Amino acid sequence: MHVFVTGGSGLTGPTVVSELIAAGHTVTGLARSDTAASRLEALGARPHRGSLEDLESLRTGAAQAEGVLHMAFGGDFADPEDLVRRDRTAINALGEALVGSGKPFISTSGTLVMPAGRVSTEQDPPDPDSFAAFRIPGEQACLGFAGRGVRACVVRLAPTVHGPRDYGFIPMLIATARKTGVSAFIGDGANRWPAVHRVDAAGLFRLALEKAPAGSVLHGTGEAAVAFKSIAGKIGEILGVPTVSLTPEEAAAHFDSPFMATVYGADIPVSSTHTRTLLGWSPTHPTLLEDLQNGDYFAQPAPTP
Image (tube, rainbow, N blue to C red; front, side, top):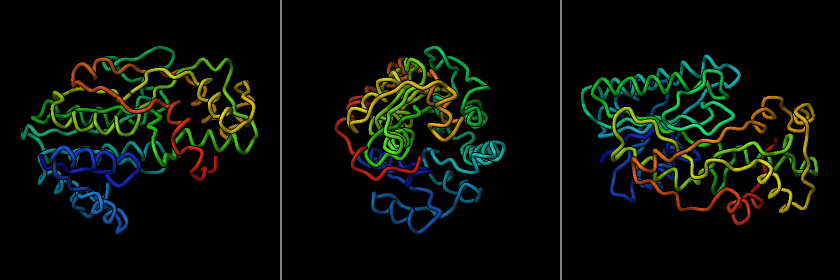
């Protein structure tokens, strides 16, 4: 299959591109810069110059492919309406190029769209009041093409897609622990986070392209519910600093952001049982705590929290 990929030169994207090529697919990747184009070429993909704002480049790339994988997401996070507009417009441009073709169109979202406080499944509706509610219109736009002759599906990734050179939530926690001298959780730390290894996530994207039925919602979670206290405890153990409990008010100052403190205190477990059964997906790579213990999280330069 010839796959057109957006976001192929980002953090998770190169692993996905490598997975697709290793499975015998050919990949053309959207590239908005010379650096992105070079990175795609080094992976064995062909760059297609353009951007999410260049809708003609998206239409052309999609029309020339046998399947589309949309992972790119960008904009000003201080302006959620702009995030929604950019994502939905790009998804519509890609999907319109596929109408009536029966080709696969996989768009990416996150499990942070799901309700908090219980284990959510693929069959549960997203929560309009969730942390990542700005991703819901993009999900709806993609799934709308399932009724227009497109094998449209959505993959929701865990908030922690861990692996080498990660620069997401976990490195931010490590940087804060280094800066403050304590590794913190909120309340009793029993709140749960899903996680997935990057290589396992790449395998899920490949399977979705190859055989996910139209209209599928898939959950990319290798672990459904990692207690946040265990994450903080492992970070404290490795850094040799105390692990402490904070109140929500203390956490807002500790993490330098009331929003991030709320996210770190959220109980957002998510099941992937249906996804595994539907596609035969079986995550086999290290868990989050194993990756913290044995990966490069404490060797790489820490981002500023």
